[in-house]
Length: 161
Image 1: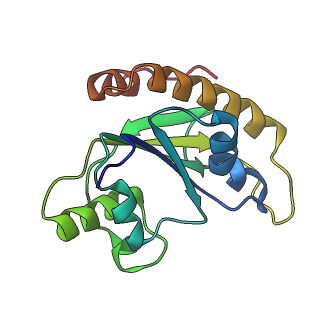
Image 2: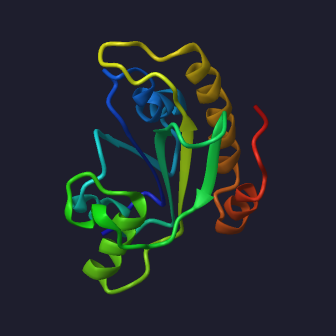
């Protein structure tokens, strides 16, 4: 099975204010050669099949527990309490990948974009819009140099607010 080498997988609920940051990033990213965009409301065990066969995977989500504008880090498989649910952490998904495919997942990274307002029916907040613009700039840089070593180097650089 031939797969597009890079997967950008965002999740969130577009009806819940800043929870739309992941899907909004995909929209702003647009079509790119060699990049598949995928979105869902949450990570689920079935998404291990979307990760399989990729060279690099970027997970994108809104988060309140990160400093603005975002946090970018490498992910490692880790089984946690979400492992048996249908709302998994990326680390638990990678652990499930290891179990399903009996091999290590491809290099995976998380872009957690700072969100503040998650009320049902609210639009994306003003601060979240600024954080999204910064995150899109990072993703543009990542996709210009789609190599594990380059993405690892970005993990060491703290974003400016």
